[in-house]
Length: 118
Image 1: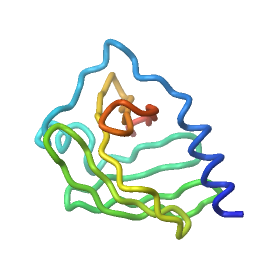
Image 2 (image 1 turned 90 degrees about the horizontal axis):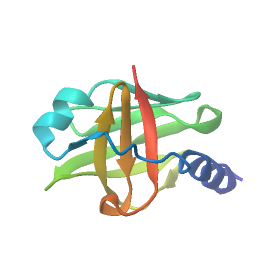
Image 3 (image 1 turned 30 degrees about the vertical axis):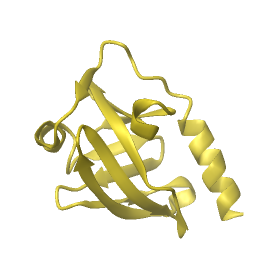
């Protein structure tokens, strides 16, 4: 049942498209400045990507999000677990526009997921 909820959650959030006028974040320094340690929200789900390499948050149905991240080249790379279900390792292109940050999976060639920065 947890896998079903996880897949439903991922499909729902995968419908957001990156906006053309968004600024690409291509350095760890810029990512730390603009995104790290801030609460990112999407409905009732939230996540914090901490400067120390930790990811934490609450997912669908108040499930726990936890994991680690690092910066490789021009990509945010993460290993996370949602409700004890590990997601595949993924490196993502990151862009920002106003108070919205978008992560494009698979080195920028996959689905895009946008979060509101609080």
